Image (cartoon, rainbow, N blue to C red; front, side, top):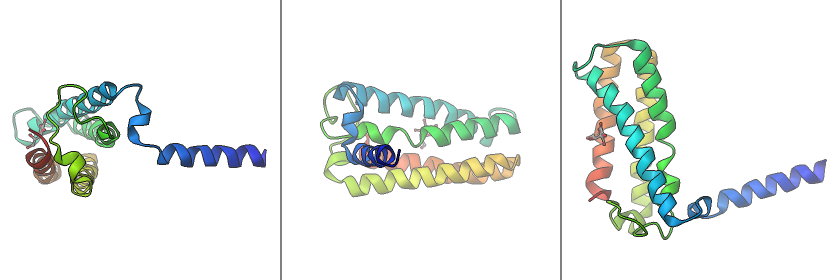
Length: 150
Ligand code: ASC
């Protein structure tokens, strides 16, 4: 039992340390994965934006639900930017993603931090809180796109 547990922990540690590309059968799959995660995230983020900007009526439950979806999705794309996924399929990702990994990680961390605040704001059920958190989150999306997306 103890040995089996140790083995499981060791396997988990090894898997965690493996390159992100190892999670995908082919580099094209990693590209598709990150693009689709970002696309779905954009759809749900857009619904929040419509409420924050008065283009759609504020619905507190929908806002909280959409923000939670964005929060989950915000954690996914990064595994799809592993080694060898820079040009295996059409992509708008700039070479800087792989040339400046620390800067890219900082940008993705910043976005996830803003999204976490957005989700907390949405849970308050207060439109003003949603509005206040939406702008900085959109700015964190844009900052990453400016530097890392064609
Ligand atoms: C969106 C979306 C993005 C961001 C970005 C913010 O709704 O799909 O990528 O907002 O445009 O500047």
